[in-house]
Image (cartoon, rainbow, N blue to C red; front, side, top):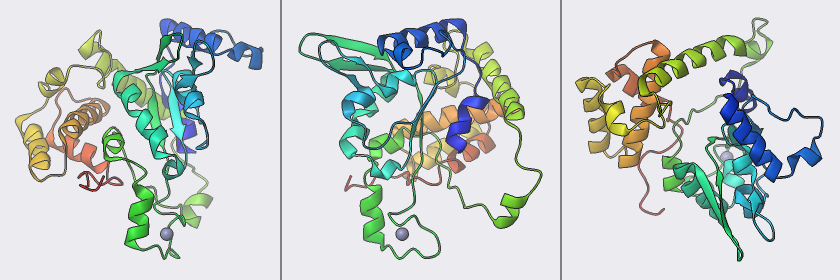
Length: 281
Ligand SMILES: [Zn+2]
């Protein structure tokens, strides 16, 4: 449910972004499926392919010249993979390069095509095959085998990995509900605007040169990151990504500087993933 709500707190697409997405949908033949949908839509897309989707339908494919897949239909929006550990490892590994580059290249005998694929990847997973909870009797070996579907390099590319506890009855019945999406959206919009003003062309904290992001961090913040690397809890790529998340935590705080607390907050958002790559992967 959280994943499905994510587009509602993201800023609307710019005119250029919306046109870019309209072009991708057009190439994919989406007009024929939903002729009533607006031609140019400024809402960030949300795509949630099933774990049984073929690599061609996910990444792009088809006969002749390949068409865009789910990954490109989610461009500038959210690609949601539910039951992540049920996904074939080969399909997940094939996502790595496009996630890094923001484009997907699909080779066919007649032509190689490149489609945009800049998505926010969101995934959900149970802690083990039985779904976890108090009745779980899975042993450590079984849990490890289940989670090994998610390879170290792909796990490395996930910026946030919160553990979500089941709601209590009192929380479910609480008439106040949660914070409205509109309030969250205002906060997100403020943080995005701060990042855009700082980085100009690069726009987002995820896209800015890492040296420039580092230059906005205090010595204490950089020491906290270095310590995480020295203790083996963070890879080189993990260092960069944690720094960028910390930059966003600072922007949500309205702070020009990335401080030690922002680094610790960024690290705390990844608790559900083991940060040290296992040698058996
Ligand atoms: Zn279990």
